[in-house]
Image (cartoon, rainbow, N blue to C red; front, side, top):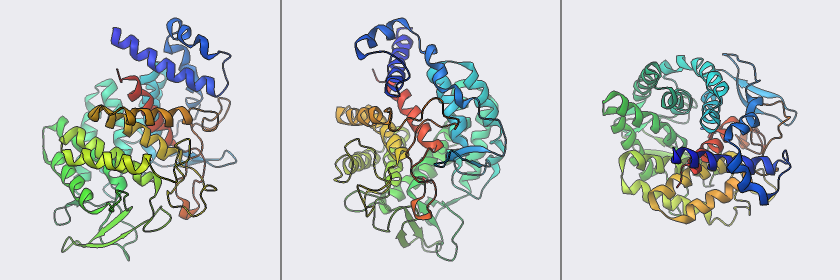
Length: 399
Ligand code: GLY
């Protein structure tokens, strides 16, 4: 009960911060403590209620918005489809308001058919952010089974010569077996599927994939390549390139964030200290980078040519903030928590938070999806919101 009370107080503090920063409440920092004492977090449930107004449509998951407020809508096969449902599940966890879990269930149901989609590695993003959160909250057995079936589909993309899970199927003229650093994020679904099914095979390929990524994706300075392409017959590396970064040798910001989060999460399940050491090294690369702006929200690529006149990537910042909280939990090193707090404090400011009256279903602005394709530059994107909300929850659970 006390724990629950403390949790709610932390959440309330985060939301008050958000509310203060966007200037929607007339309250000074002096009476902050009083507000936490008097109010429950339920009072803040309406802070996000505009997300509930976005119309339900099984073919139109909201992914991002452009500068005119036009929403990019995608079908469930898109790698981002699970985030909107995930956001609603996470807001339910923050607020306890059943309007969010009810709506989350409806969006989650539209994703079920993806459990058979073997054309992509993005099963974790799609199914774990939606059904995974839903299962932890509802204990619904059908959700658990969908996660296991999805893991079985993802399992078919593992190649025992390469010792990795294949990421993409496109660009076959150039790549035989591309593996991207982002793929670390899909391992959580596999680890959990082994827990749920008591079949260790998903765990085994997840751990091996992480080992292969650790061996081949990192440079001497602990930054990561985006894509490593392998020969399917010999397992040898064919090339190390980028797809969404500035150049083959540059450090694409979200890729570094996926690596930090992914190896910390892989340590959670395996307790392989090499994974934890890699997370610490990536954190050091990110936190001390000369091109990291003062507010710790990275430019879209650490080596983008026109820094400081380059777009930021708030999604990378949110992934880093969430990953650093977990890294703090395993290391006890306060610098990780302090850095995460710094990012979250800045992301909660008026510069990054979309105003309440906005009619787009997103929380944060200034993310960059795919700069080389001039796609989703410096705008709201659903996955930035997901990791931002997750970081709020993770921070609230730190004693
Ligand atoms: N996984 C794709 C991205 O991070 O843009």
